[in-house]
Structures are given as C-alpha cells and as structure tokens.
Length: 81
Image (cartoon, rainbow, N blue to C red; front, top):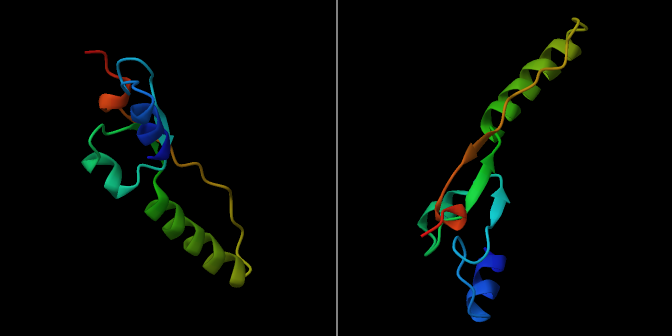
C-alpha cells in the first residue's frame, strides 16, 4: 500500500508507469484507489492444516508435510491503460 502512495506522490501511475505486486492479499487491498495485484496464499487453510498436523503429532501419529498452492490475483496495479 505504501509503495502505491509514494508512486503517486512522484507523479507515477501504478499499473501504467510502474507495475506493483504485493503478497498475502490483505482484505483492504481490493478497496484501494489502485487495487494491487497480489499473490494470495491460503492463510486460513494453512492454519487449519497446521492444527491438524499438530494434533496428529501430539497423538504420536505419523505426519507428512503438505503444500498449499498460492494463486495470483490480478488487479489494476499491473494492468495497462
């Protein structure tokens, strides 16, 4: 969010002059004047999976690492006018 504000202070247009990409897709991002493209990582699912693995470990049951896929959410900060 800060980068987009600074770019605008310098007269640069996010998404037209400079592409901006963030990470974690915070809820407020979609409501910004220039919504940033972001990498969405499934934080809620990560927490649920971590708790599930922890409970299995506490019971001394075998566990395996799990991978959850992030995905790209394309918004105005990387689109050309």
